[in-house]
Length: 308
Image 1 (tube, rainbow, N blue to C red):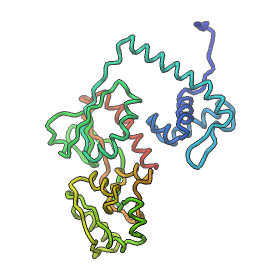
Image 2 (cartoon, helix red, strand yellow; image 1 turned 180 degrees about the vertical axis):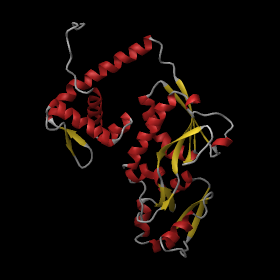
Image 3 (cartoon, helix red, strand yellow; image 1 turned 60 degrees about the horizontal axis):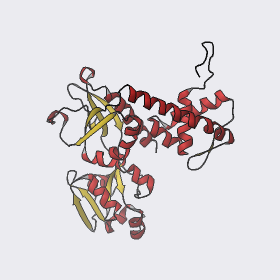
Image 4 (cartoon, rainbow, N blue to C red; image 1 turned 135 degrees about the vertical axis):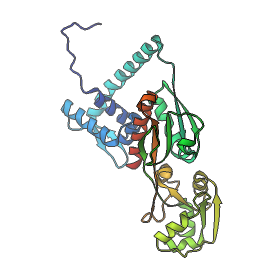
């Protein structure tokens, strides 16, 4: 039924409805923020805006882990959830009829460890949000000006300046010891001096990392019972997860494991500064239009990780 020209719908803010529905479906503002590629605070503000517009005291109850719907929230979700599903279905059908489903290709080059430990576990969220963008990811540790091919987005440490590229921060990082909870209990890692009785996991490309951290912690002369050197950070992190020893963990790359309890930080008070991760894109005249969506999503994911 087509409404008459004089019919005016009184609708709530639609972004607020989207934030509410995502938070209700996940039972979490944090998970909703990741899905919508915004910050936790943005979801909270949108929900507050919707509560004010509706004139209800609260749509959610805050729990120790996540949120739960109030009776007002339950009633709203019962109506707006199916409505959003119908809108999404209609949009898909329209796009299919218009032939707009052809994927746009986004060529991304990132550091191998960053890709494995941070980007790939989150990339499914980007594909759900932007199904029309095909991400082609390759890995390399080569400097940007040494890459043999052109890319739309290159992720490296930073901040750095490269001719013809604009940099965008993704996520910050520090480095500190990490190990499996089982190893920490078994070897009773109660003080830094207890590291003498464990295997320290080294990365071949950063041989002084442990020595620098021990010096910072005031134990520069400590000699561990054994060492194991691996050629990539992701191998040392996996070795720590498997209980082979204690690794120097880049915080950005072990955040998921720390949150899930697969890893722990036995001595969190001492950490070393490290370069942050940045996305470098060609200047506006040469940039792929899909890069903007990817950069916004990266920034939102970085904000979620930083606020963990």
